[in-house]
Each structure stands twice: as C-alpha cells, then as structure tokens.
Image (cartoon, rainbow, N blue to C red; front, side):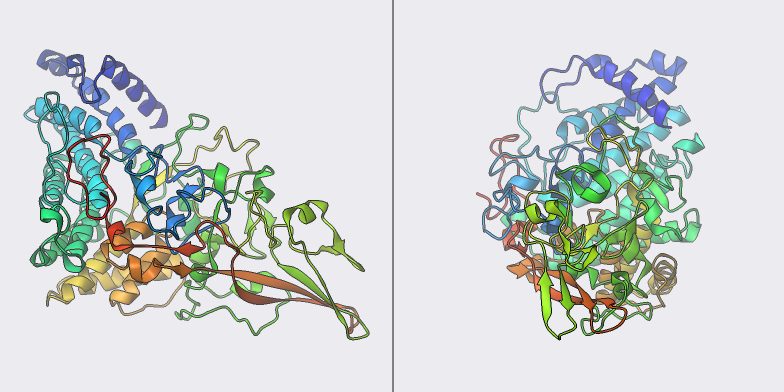
Length: 616
C-alpha cells in the first residue's frame, strides 16, 4: 500500500497543479466522463491525495503532527507535563490569555496554521458533485470515501470551533468563508455525510492490503460513533450561546447518543476486528497490520511525513543527543493505572524495594506500554531514575549525594566509597531545563515512540512507524460511554453488549478484572486506554470538566531515593519514593477557563466571521 499510495499521490498532485487562489482548483483536476468510462481507476487515483490532506488535521497542533516541536497535545492536559521551562508564551498555560489561543488556531500570536479545511473541502466537493451519479461501482466506492473524508474534515473543525460554515458545492465563487452555521447543524452535517458514505462504502477495500489505509464501511461507522458521542455529550453537558454558533440543545443529547451507540454496536457485533494482547506494539511500529487497527496513516522512512515526533520525546539514553524528552508523564496520571485487583491507589510511599521497578509491579499492563518508569525498559535499555543517594555510614551518620544541575550530571561524579553508583540517576532526577533528555518528573513517555530499533539520527525521521488513527479499542469505549449515558434517559438496550466488550478490553489490554460500568468507570478506562493518542484534551472539553480538572492545578512528580546502608554486611541497597511538586516548568500548573471549551476562529483566514465567546 505504501508504494502504491505514493504513486497515487504523485498523480493526484500533478493533476492539482496550477492552483493560485487558496480556494481555486484548476478545472483539469476533474476528468471527463469519457476518461472515467475508459479508465475508472483514474478517478480513484485523482482522489487519493485527499488522505494526505486529511492527516494534517487529525489530532494535530500543527504540521500534520500530534506535536509541533515541543508542543505535544497532551502537554496541555492533566495527562502530560512539560519537561522544559522555555516557550513560556505559548506553552505556559498557567496564565490567562496565553493558554490555547495561539496553539490551536491563529487568533492571538499567529503561531500555528489553523485547522481550516476549506481548500480540501472544495476539492472533495467537486469530486462528489462530478462522480456521485456514476454507474461504476468502483467510482461510487471512492465517492463514499469522499463523503467520509468530508465528514472527518468537518469533524476536526467543529470539535474545535463549534458551528462552522457548511458547504456541499464547489467554493470557487465564494469570496469569504464567514457564514457560520449553528453547532447543531454542523454536527448534523457530519452525520449526514457519514450516512452517505455508509451507503457506498464496502465492508472491505477491494485491495485487501489497503483496508486499513482507506475508508471502508467500518471506518465510517467508527468515526460516526466518535462524532456522535462528542455531539451527544456536548448537548448534555454544554450550553447554547453566541446565537447557537456554540452549543447544542439539551433535548438532542439522546438522539446523538443513540446514533453513537448504534454505529459502535454494529462494529462490535460484526466481529471483523479484535483487541490485541500486545497493546504497546500497536503504536511503536512493531505490529502495523494488527487486527485492532481500523484506520491508520502509513509512513515511509525519511519522507518527513510523521504524526509522532520521536525527535522531541525520546530520552537522551536512547537518542544520544539533546533536544529530547520535552513532554513526560506526571505522577498524577501514573497513579491512575489500576492494580491488578482493579483498585486505583497511590504508590506505596512507606515501602522500600530492592529495585525501583518493583514499585510498579502488579499494575495494569498498559502502564508498561505507556510509561517508562524508574527501572523500566525500552529498546533493551534499563532506565536509572532517582533524585539522590543517602549513605548511612557505620558510625550512624547519613551523608547525602546528588546532582543539583545538569552540569553536575555531565561530570558524572560517583558516590564516595560506592563508585558503582551515580549520585543521582543517569536519567534523572536533577534540575535540567535545557531539554538535554533527562527527566525532572520521574518518568518518560513510551507510548507512540518508535520501538523497533534505535535510530542513528532521529532528526531525519528514519522510522517508518504508522500512525493509528482509529482502532477497535476506541469503538468499544465509545459504545460503553454511549450506553451508560443513554441509561440515564431510560434506554438500556446497549448496556449488555457494551459491558461484555468493556470487560474484554480491560482483560485483554490491561489484565484487569471485570468492573461494572458507570460514568466514572468508563471515563477512567477511556483515559487509560487512549492515553497520549490525542483524546484527553477533547474529552475534557466535551464533558465540560476542563475547569474542574485543570484550572490552576499543580501536577506532582516522583522522586525515588537510593539508600546505601553500611551498617549491614554487606551494605544493603534499596529504594524509597517521595511525592513532590515538580520544578517550575512550563506546564506544571494547568490552567483552563470557560472560553477554552472552544478554540478561537482564525480571523486571518475568514475576515468577518463571528468569533467565539471570550476570544474577541
């Protein structure tokens, strides 16, 4: 598929050359009926470049990636912590006015390209208008893909801005994209496009190897379950304002939630997809044809097309160069991984362990797939993370050794009398604000990092790791949440099938026992299973709990302590743990205001458009 996709993209892009205005598409991009009659595959080849355009929007902050330089999407939630101190303008989200304005749209600061997809929508609209009445089955299948892509392009805008301008016809004669529809009509438009896609899409793509790279019926159902879940919860928990450009009527919540549950249940019932027992390998490049993956973006090494930016998030131990480990997990989220008996409880701060990794034993299997913790492993390396060394001498006195800054670490001084040990861990913890690749928090990111092999140069993107966009685990979580929400309206039709699938996910992914679903349980499971895939930020917004979870909240770090006791023979060596406030880094303190439930619209792209409340 990867080679074929590149051929298609080159052909499609060559057909698109000649565009001058940002909305104008040269007429040569639409083939004649005679051309299609003779060579129906040309319509398909012409269309496929739109997948490359779609990837620039999904889960992204900028440049089509989940991260733009150090700005990982989850660094702006309670799941992520900045491991650096600079970029205090855009990154520092403990100050009103500098939180999300310049990050998710061009409004204040003009730092990033906004997600404003009308150029691609114009191309897709022309394709649908031209070929929707074709009598060729293959062409109609591609039209189904076009409806899917149009729905997805709108979904990425509506979840950011609320109501947006809606167009189903070509936009060449439109002078300005500024006539906003209501948010409710915008979600309805997404649903209608997905329903149109479902009429035309096959259950399996004609070329089996392309089935995860292009939309099929289940891909559209999965996106429908996601989009309608968003709409339903926004209707239930939000409020209507700004002339209905923001918010959905509460009486619509049940309708949207039913659509979400029905779409997800069809996927579960049909049994085409299955959960993987090797959860981490879904994301690290080791198992890219796994049957849990419904839709992905394929990557080819050294093309510069990536979604996960290893260059910014690998540790120094792996990368062997600076500018890394920019975002790491905080202690707060690590302690959300359940113990194997199904309890959410803190680490044992009263215990001492011979090995630091023992503090994290007997927890949800997804912890090891998501986080590099003290004593944890990645790419064959074991990570040494501790704040300081306490040596109890034979006379009963205790001496303390540590690195207080990165310069001390570079000197790599050893513990006197115990030269086997560094004063602080080789991977942290000591104050390091220069992005040298150690941790100030006690942990490193693991999920989504390339785990096939260590690369010689992470800057030139040698990894060919695919990006998982939609997977079966999310569909189960969508069904579970929709079923529980519907039960509050007296609709219990989906609870049984959702509970069975939910317990399977907990067992297969996490090694955890069954747990009766309620709203708190399903939201927690969603947080754990989808962590660092780009969902948490949007979930906090659609549940309208951003202020509760993040307003003026200070995250915690973990400081393991190495102990050497010379009063025993031989000297005993063990570790203890301390929970502390992290240094004053860019996102240590989280901040979320009411206006942040919506992103600011890009006024520079659409002069005259009505701005969202609070962003004027």
